[in-house]
Length: 245
Image (cartoon, rainbow, N blue to C red):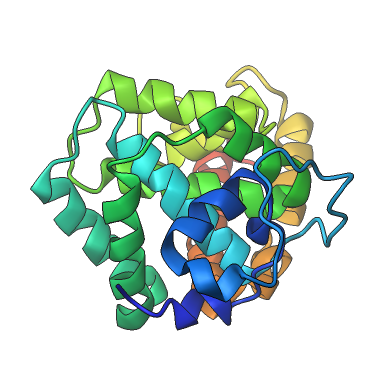
């Protein structure tokens, strides 16, 4: 089993306790001997930085990504290969090697999804949770065959993380294009006025600016930059369609 040095040295905080801590303890047992890992511990008993750290973000992603892959009842070898490549592109080779070991363990265990999402919801800030959901859509789409159960699982996770339906649809539209996608990315209706469109864009630009997740590492920030680019592209598309100055 891997040493998990990449993860332990990446700003683990809230993931050392609660349901995530219990799962993490499966991999690194002796390393956590000095920590108290209590699956029933809530956030009031464990006050920490609510924004979380890079390690918290990465481990949350691995747990939730495994849940998404298991959504249709089994994990295909092709899915693991795609996810491995996805992780390598976003987090590097060493972290990916460790992550795949975690996924292997998690694939044979019951993931307390509701409890895990509740822990993330109350200990991770909104920009980080939004970026986490963006990554999960990427994982679901990695094999170019997103089933209805995976979409339902993504929506369920989004709800449990406290992410609003408009934000969920915005991120979904960044991955699945249709005639309404540009408007949905900005979390507005195609019937919105030009002023409402400008206001929505300013709000999206502020909430989704890459600097909001810079504390999670440069690779996560670069992915946020990609998401930010899609927001700008949607706005430019609408401006061109409507001849907005």
